[in-house]
Image (cartoon, rainbow, N blue to C red):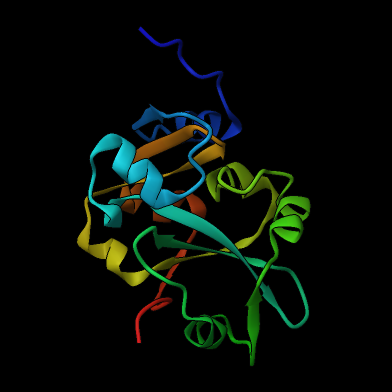
Length: 160
């Protein structure tokens, strides 16, 4: 039996808000949502990655998209009310969030007041897996709870 992951801030927050979740641990050498999905034998569209997106000015935003989908920066810019946005580099993402890429989590960053957006196809799912704030640990929870806790706005962030 594997040891339970140490309790992370994201787990404490969900517990405080009485949100049911399942801890899903995997080798921390897996850094992609698709890799996590493959590890658990899950469809790629149920594992969401958290991307750090930089507007031209102001605070970066977090955009959650399924591992199987590619971010459309034009759509994201429009949705967040910016002319243009760009992906943060790995280094920028890590320094802005204080978390390692592969472990960036909207749930773990609630105290930093990032605006959170989630890609529309999430509404077709009951549950998703998202990072717990540390590589090798994901949390599985109800989509509606994730949206409520992170105060995420549902936007069209991928696709043509």
